[in-house]
Image (cartoon, rainbow, N blue to C red; front, side, top):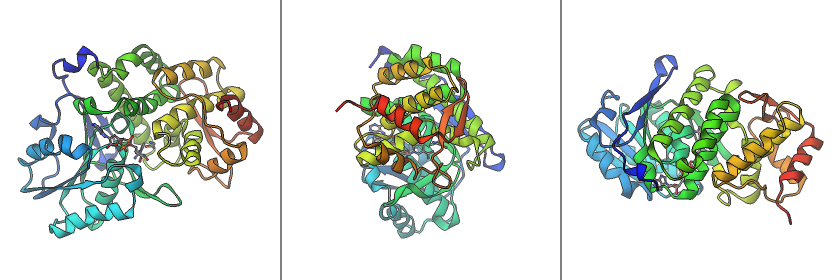
Amino acid sequence: MSPDNTSPALSPKRVSIALGERSYDIVIGSALLDQPSSWTGLPDAADALIVTNTTVGPLYASRLAARLDAHHRRVLQVELPDGEAHKDWQHLNRIFDRLLEAGCDRKTVLYALGGGVVGDMTGFAAACYMRGVPFVQVPTTLLAQVDSSVGGKTAINHPAGKNMVGAFHQPARVICDLDLLDTLPPREVSAGLAEVIKYGPIADPTFLGWIEAHIDALRAGDKPALAHAVQRSCEIKAWVVGQDEREGGLRAILNFGHTFGHAIEAGLGYGAWLHGEAVGCGMVLAADLSARLGMVDAGLVGRLARLVEHAGLPIRAPRMPPERWLQLMRVDKKAEGGEIRFVLIDGLGRAAVRAAPDALVREVIATHSAAA
Ligand code: NAD
Ligand code: GLY
């Protein structure tokens, strides 16, 4: 970790997400958990429920509860087991059980304290409990601060597929306290960086250059660098979601690298590679496919591969038969009528969703797969 980790608190920045009556702020800074101003102006309610997991709860839940005591008559807590494997009905029900056994009413505010798994589950519980209650995102991973806590996608997994059961439900606020990232394992930091990198090629070449220049600082946990990365990522996501909340079209660009990435995750079995690792490698393949289709300069492929590798992420795809890749990519949510659709770079800083000939996709897979 760099010396900057111990630098004085950064003044908080706010990014607004404009969705009419569902608009809200993303607050980004250090020491936010303990600052009273982070928590003022949120929905007033007698009861609050902190949803967290067995890793994050012992680290931060008592500090959050101490803050919330000033705003709610009761601050309850439920601690779920850690891991994607528990993002299911059974564990979602644990949230409802806790709310109902405590007699929580329809104004109760849920607080998601954790990474994307806790955030997605808490958001879905909030969308459903008594037909909808407010919730606040307190993301504790880099991936959650730059992506999953923002934009209102909530879900649990089904044995047939990831995030297959869910709802759009926007949080009342997102509080990105950068200090919470101090305890994040380096592998999770790298996974989060994949989702930071993706915003460059799809929306902002200047940001891509900035990430290249600051990748070591980001990996080392440098707070000013993290603050800028989270802020710019959230600004771009807010811009996209503000135009296309329910993914009628544009929002799909946020899935750059995800079609190849989901095939890696599903093909190897969930958990073998982290989501961010698969997305990092997937972006290299998607950039190459874009180049082969003549949509972007071939130089982007090597440039992106160097950055992804520098972020601590794999750039060689696992060996799987090409037919298996194609089969897995056909169950992607963007597929239409069995046709795989990729997010491709259409000139650096712009993305488009397109189909591609299978032969070209096979070439890309062969080029980037690990040697036997
Ligand atoms: P995660 O929630 O599993 O967290 C990763 C690991 O880090 C876990 O073991 C967790 O307990 C631990 N952890 C979290 N915060 C910590 C901290 N501060 N200190 C120490 N350990 C900590 O994974 P993730 O990468 O945050 O999120 C992945 C999930 O997000 C997936 O389920 C994915 O589907 C979802 N997702 C959702 C969206 C969306 O728009 N809703 C977008 C991207 C990803
Ligand atoms: N993470 C992609 C989205 O929110 O649409």
